[in-house]
Image (tube, rainbow, N blue to C red; front, side, top):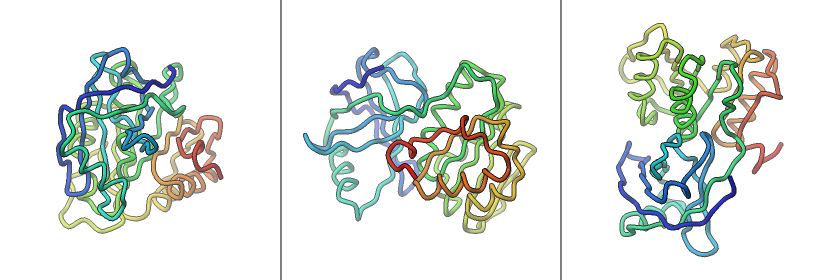
Length: 244
């Protein structure tokens, strides 16, 4: 799919937590088509385009979701927040990115995300549930504090309702209250790369997708490599915009 520039409607803006807001966009169904794992770019002006992972799998109805981290101290973030508060329409360019779910593969998935990197994994998991409902998925979602896992109830729901999905919440800070766990829901304290290094995951058996900052992605790769990581089955947008 080649990228297209179009105008779409902003149909909903909601706070997912104090620092992350969700945006729902609506456009022509054909023009909004994308593969699970791709991103779009929002146009702030003619020269400024800001990329965001698409947080929903293709639905065929021209509707998609974004999860946007609000950084008040960053000019583009403040401009975008102001724009969304007053604009009914946005100019977008999509789809972009080659880090997409391989639906021809039957290998289990190891999905590692930090912060709003979860949005990319959400789209991938939604596509798996629709097209490969028995494919094994291990989701590791990292944040500084528990409250930063802004859609944790959804991740828990996946694990509770589907025997093939395991959810690992990873927080650097200790929990303020006990988190209920189960055989498919787990909590780990520490930095994500340190937790992965001690997890004994046999990553050579997985298709591995990583979403987060370049530092987080490469630290996670370094943690998994000694455990047998198959570099040919490793996927991340970071490789395109911040190669090592």
